[in-house]
Amino acid sequence: MKARVTIMLKDGVLDPQGEAIRHALGGLGHKGVGGVRQGKLIELDLDATDTDAAQAEVVKMCEGLLANTVIEKYSIEIV
Amino acid sequence: MKARVTIMLKDGVLDPQGEAIRHALGGLGHKGVGGVRQGKLIELDLDATDTDAAQAEVVKMCEGLLANTVIEKYSIEIV
Image (tube, rainbow over all chains, first blue to last red; front, side, top):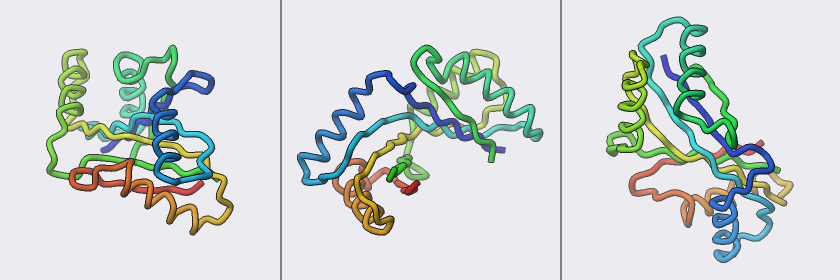
């Protein structure tokens, strides 16, 4: 079973990395880019066979290690 | 219009960041994690109103700046 965790900065938290990308895209001639946010994507191969158990386990991983929940939000997709 | 770009290392390319996460998860007691790959997620706000034009523009951005196509693969989702 695979889990896909998406971690983004919360709305309102300054994203300098995204801003740098926006600036660089502008410099390369890509006009019309209003805003850019960069986040992380983590793909986990899990031995678990039960979807609910896997989901609960990945939530624990996010809270404990993967995401900084003060400034980041995460979403989990079990595939 | 929003575009969501997912950038992952190609299969077979060593992912030390993912490996570090796997190791840390093991240390925190999360057994049953077979493999971890970490990638990037970039969300772009685009002024474009035509889906095909937006898609073509984002492909150019990926090839020119966002992804290192030697070692990374990307996928684009227009939302």
